[in-house]
Length: 156
Ligand SMILES: [Zn+2]
Image 1 (cartoon, rainbow, N blue to C red):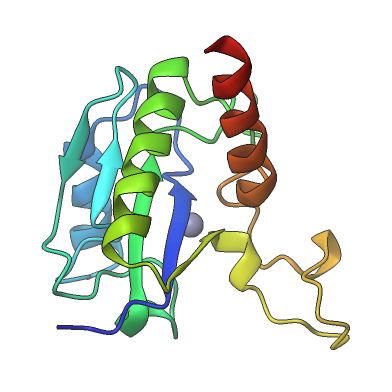
Image 2 (tube, protein in one colour):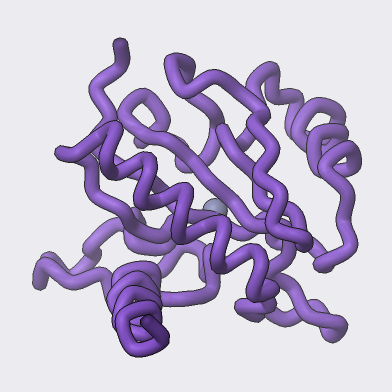
């Protein structure tokens, strides 16, 4: 079994209507990857599709794949081609539940966004926006998890 240190959240960095087939084609034909970019992909309707077994590393973040599980929502780019957190409510709901399940399975793993694995160039221990290699997944994962849980408690 691999040692999982990071559960990494991504966006596909596509328009929301991109299909899983087109994304897989891009990895294979344009990037020449044998393995998919993520283990799980979340469709607009909230369905979670497993692309790859967790036992094997996928191609989410170069240099971090051996110890990571990658999970992505379809979307992340708006009509003007700009990065945007355009997750549907169904995607948020599925993402939250999947992250809870994964954190139970890998209790020592951190949950973070792709951009949080950018190099800490000035060495202050904080990955600042100016240091982000990518915007992916276009939201603050820790902050979102905290608030999402709080909202659930309020609604209950
Ligand atoms: Zn990413």
